[in-house]
Length: 207
Image 1 (spheres, rainbow, N blue to C red):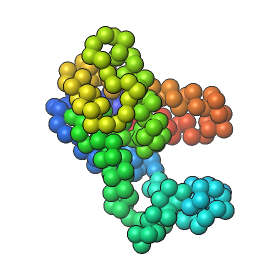
Image 2 (spheres, helix red, strand yellow):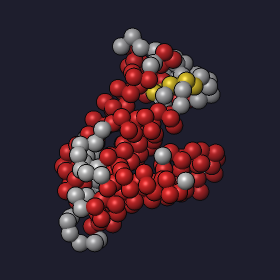
Image 3 (tube, rainbow, N blue to C red):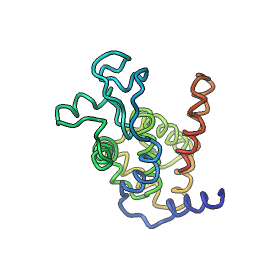
Image 4 (spheres, rainbow, N blue to C red):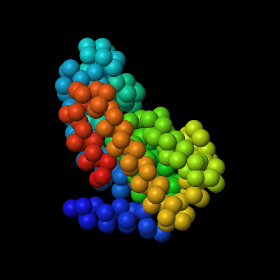
């Protein structure tokens, strides 16, 4: 298994640099880990008000939560419970892949990793982790990276330029993944109740 995972990682980061595609991260990571329909009334994400008993109870499907999308989808005539996979995919592609310009990245592996981080911990959380990666690069000398990191076209172009060389691409990818694992580890240390999610987070990271 370890050899298989290592092979997949190598293929992702060593492949020729072309524009990344959303479908791999959607099919292989986001969709399998976001799950189907959730109707737990005690889950605040299943209520449009973001708190149990506040607003309308619409649930969560494919990670599309009532607290974030319930009201806006109703305006479009869509009910979360009846969302199709294709409808959910379009939402993720619009609000993460395209919003943060991951479609402009030339490395599929780096694009997949950053996109799933943004989905799992929010765009701001993913930017904070990327900032830590860029700080490491900063202390190596040149080139000077954009700090703090924001998912702007300029930052994406900087990543593309920096990762043209395979050695930089491999190091960049590994640094992102290691910091993501450390983030989950530190989170569980601070909030032991989150331990129940740790195995799933790690599996999601390496998928």
